[in-house]
Length: 264
Image (cartoon, rainbow, N blue to C red; front, side, top):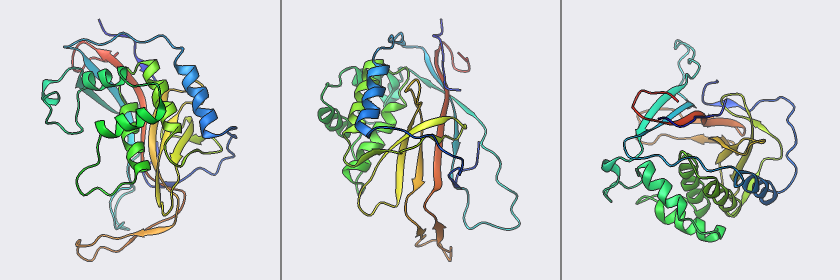
């Protein structure tokens, strides 16, 4: 029998942030995420899926679109919700050769074994999702990437979610935006990112300000710059302005179902 769903009830990818009057977010990133952690860890844990079941996900995603823009091109369509089903236990991703592509069963087992200390959590998370060869991401960028992947795990145990939030607060340069933002689905969200010298683009993790459940993520431009395309013919540089949104993902619903194609 399928478990009860988690329902988190658009715009195109690269756009300016909303000018609407925001609501203030009081407190430091440590205070905000401790409140989030202490709230979610009191939630009853969901049933653990079993082999043969599927993880259902419905989400909205948006990206910048093609470049250079053509005056003759039709306007970009509004993003539509996409549904996805993945096996909870998939032997193809449990053979030790899959790199970052781990089954949900493996990810949930990893989350169940996280230590309590946030620094120790970050160390384990980096090792679980290491940087690729030739990848020059900083430690903060590495932390944010790996935590973003793990926060998408479903159904995530409340204790594990609390540990991930406390680890997120321990990321070097972590900070919470001082006002609520709107995610791609138009929902209020806390935006947690990290700041470091020379940063042009920041990945932000979005969290529901009431339930403190994970809502998705976004990449926001924090410094004007021009993106170049070496080796791609005469493609002109693409200008980006601080406040532009590059990529956005909004998790709308998740659940555990018995068959591919079933909905919770």
